[in-house]
Length: 548
Image 1 (spheres, rainbow, N blue to C red):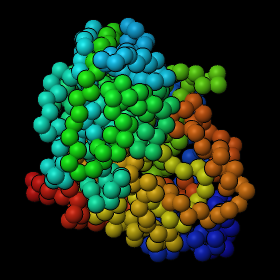
Image 2: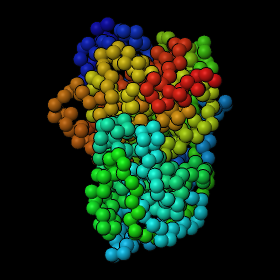
Image 3: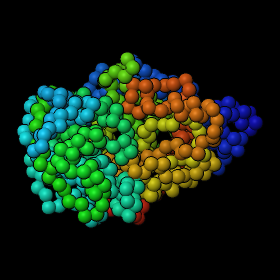
Image 4: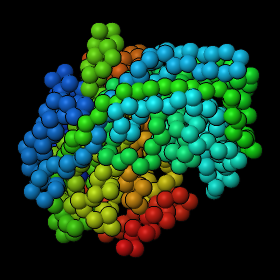
């Protein structure tokens, strides 16, 4: 016992003696499984996957081929069997579109003058239409507030307005961010997501959509918009619910447009209140895009460890393997390596697979390891899987999703994104207690994180999905080293600087991975199927799945 304790201390120096003992062999934990999860191998996986060799892991590139073959080899080395009959791959047909404005300047024309803005600095624009030329000519602008139609919240920003052939200007997020009496207060609903706003504008017959960027409301800066919505864009092969153009404008640009229309920028404050009515701006915009597109396929990589007694029932661990590839250079570096986002998650799949293989108590249900493609392009790989499941939906117990980890340090708490949604949270709480940790909600519920990662596509077909991360109650609170690591992590999201850093601390990540394992291991030994909680908007979908 003393020897085990000393070894554990060497691995996890940030943890107290009590926590270390509990993380190895008490409270029903499988010590053989947990000892298989190590910093050394985990860090090696992350370092390799996020190296320049993989060219930023962009689907449809050489980096795609290198990445999926690497993941397949790790699955084989871990003695996992193919997850798609005799194959480790599930082909995901997609279309890659590169939209280029013929004129880098975009001009808005009103009765009192014009406003001209610059591509990338002030706006980004593109089209998912499978046409070589996209032409929007003298399209009228309409400010539609949040661009939401939500009968259950008694909200309709399109009421009384016809936007067919027009370009709508909409705010990001939803009214609950600003008024806790509206929607779900500061917990963003799907209505706040940019994907929904594009979809609703298309349903309304709009020719185009321009979203007003706001760093707090979007939960990311303009640099993320600039890098993420330019260059080659991937989509599933579907040309149905789309407007001609989709884009973003800066807040400064929006204010200029409102001023040109003779409207105060305070109109956005009005739009946050009940009873807002969409406003025609009496401004027109024209743009032309050259669209280069090609169809091809990327791959989800899938493997399994068959259950001992109920192999037809499956628990699916997911992590997306893709990132942004090679893009606009920042400080001379143009490779977007994606170490935290999400080589960290894929590496966790390998560590959890090691743990299940080493477990004293083998899983009774089948454990599936699914590395999905094209998350950065709109959760496409997981969307394709959900629409074309390899394992029956009504036999899929749960999805446990890992998307980015916290390399700042170990925490006493663990954060569940979208807390209050699924009964998997009951398992999180019980497993966390085994490690002397507590479950909390996310620190920024207004970011809409529950709708922004791959678990959400499982949720949409009635399968409870867990998206969980480190908390904020750092064990090494207030130390100089902790502050240094915070600085080392800052500004890396969707930037070339998301590379393995010597200042990062992997001990907390390892403890999170152990928790992810224990949750799935516990579920694998039970006969129950968790559902959505009573007040979840997805409860009906869960009931439908379980009744099949």
